[in-house]
Image (cartoon, rainbow, N blue to C red; front, top):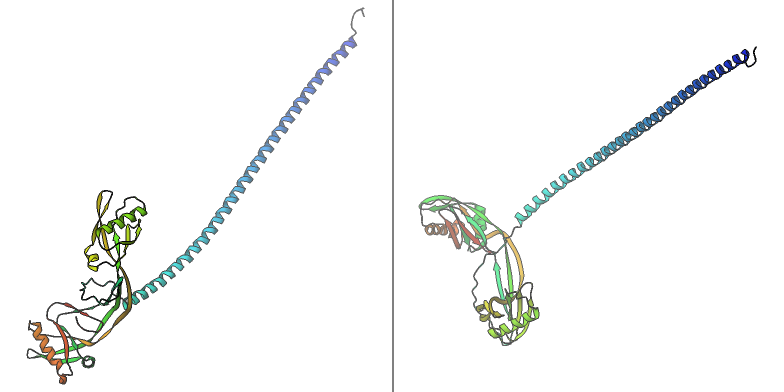
Length: 367
């Protein structure tokens, strides 16, 4: 071996060392790759696990929502069923109440028909006959009206009403019912019926007419204070000379009415004559209405009805005679004879054609 040469064994050892290092590097690289692969696998597994957990959680939440939705649906169905049952119960109750109301309405209608009264009394002209004066000075005039409603009865063709002086005569003729009467030399069978009257009323109306107070209507709205308006009304009626001095004026701005009280009694004809009076204010002339102050009171109100005691209805009258008075005379003559069961006739009304309306008062007298 020459000086400076590297021993062969050393070279071989070096080569082996290099090979060993290369192999080590390869092993380290393989282990690193294996470790990386394992880490990747673990990461993938973890990712799959997390994804699965998320899927399971989502599925659980969806199942929970579905369950809650189902529970709500069942709850709604239960509530709807309860409401439906309540509605059915209410419908049944409403039906029962309607039937009960119908029965009560029918009963009320029956009672209304049974106890019906005339709702209004027609207007009638009243004639002032006399005024009873007293020595003492009075502030009010008292008036008394006796009012009785007249009951209408429709009388048809071939019928007659006959009123007797005695109620027993009418009662016996109704009991016999059939009566053979000679009309124009022909025997005609007439039938007698009682008169069932509708309900009527009778009452007394007491009116107290003040001789010192008048009502004033349609007072213009001048947009001034009530005190000023009272002063203007007092001055106005003092100038008009309806009476003496003005004692008091009560004014209502909302209703535009006033009650004027005079110091002395006013003549009644003055109150009636001055239905309208001029009213001067702010340089203009207005027209106001005046009327006497009247207090009204209803007394002795009575309801009367029933069967007429002295008047009967005759039907089946057949006569060619057009003069109703002649037929009435023939019927009256027949029923005046005691031999025919009759008596003294007070009034008779016969209808030969069409229909007529006769009126009864509470005493059963034909008017």
